Amino acid sequence: MRSFFETEYNSFYDPKAKETEFVALFAESIQGTGGYIIPPEGYFERLKKVLDCYHILLVSDEIQMGFYRTGKLWGIENFNVAPDIIVFGKSLTNGLNPLSGIWAKEALIAPDVFPPGSTHSTFSSNPMGTRAGLEVMCIFEETDFEPMVREKGRKFLDGLKGLQKKYRNIGNVDGMGLALRLEVCEEDGYTPSKALTDKILNEGLREI
Image (cartoon, rainbow, N blue to C red; front, side, top):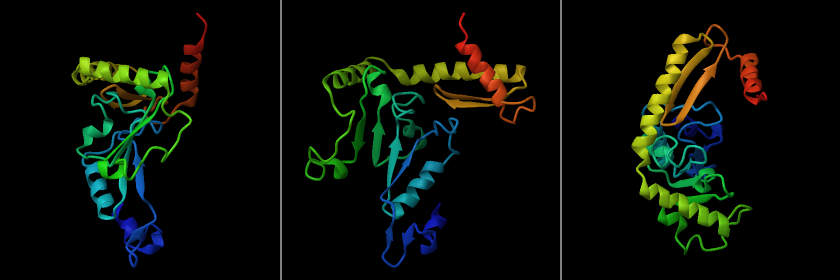
């Protein structure tokens, strides 16, 4: 990534003005829709060094990976970096009511720099959502979810690996906590199989 900033022709960085075209980079700690891809060891640490060098904020998107899905409250906690901003939602109300939230370093969100009214949202604070969100956070204080999620995830992953050995149509199996993936493939165990995926979907939707 550092090579993107070496010349103005990449359009990311103007070495004369020492300015970048980007203020922040948004990243999921584990890529969700892309197939639950776990980054290689040291990836986020190296990325954060580059971003800090060019004064670009790291925003951790915890919409899918937050709230202990990976075994940590925030997925990014697994990768030895401290983001500048965290955005979250969905599990905040356990599906009861749309509600999202943002956490940021004090210098970015202190009342004198980010006063009330600085932003708005269709799903901003509302009585039902905020009460549900408070209850979810209270539940987190009552139970130690980290070891629970890691142990359940380990057992689940072991089960998937057992199926992988039994069926040639199961390709790569991996995960962290309860953020798990199983690749449905052709007989070669590598080529994605849309036909088999559709068959599994239709079987799941079939009336009993």
